[in-house]
Length: 254
Image (cartoon, rainbow, N blue to C red; front, top):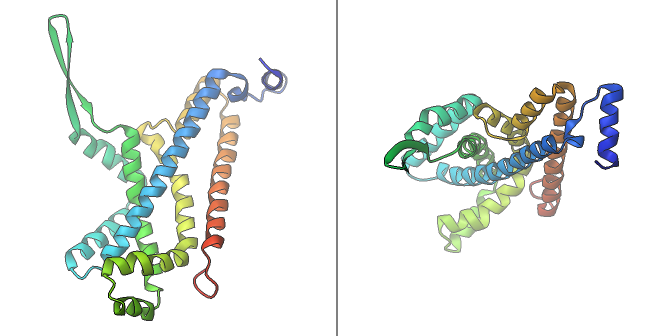
């Protein structure tokens, strides 16, 4: 045990402040694994939710009524229902529909069992991505509507297709406009990843709960959790603000 670990162990013996994640290797490994899972879950959901937002905003401008109504129904459903209920729906209602049969032979006996195709982590990614993506659709839609009509008409006059105009003209300008709102939604998404605890995803809150259940150090772990999430959100906000400044166009957007 090195000096830092010994110091925290002595702190526990003298003051009762029990930070086992510092001096206990097993708890430290569990905590770091939960932190890694939270970061991975957040990054994957951030990427997928942005993709959903971009595609959904494009479909809202479709000439056909069916894709527009489909996206509108999707947005209304996911924006007006609690994210925890959505996660339960995906995991408990849809999860049993995606099963695979596994045969295992032991001696002369063959055992057949059903195994889920998707783990709780996969369902958390799907649920949180669709939840945040619904808000991103509206964010990108508002950014698209702020693009001057004259700019779009100029692109049409050059013979560009609707998809080319969207990717090369509208989206880059709209992205700059909606970055502040997108930043807020992505921050909320990172905080919402704690709901994955409800379906036993081994993220930071779930692993911390195991630690304080074993070590009875709830106040210490709650304090650590608070500062860790403040740090994660601060890193995201810093990166998004740097991105906003890098993409800023003088006289346009942010």
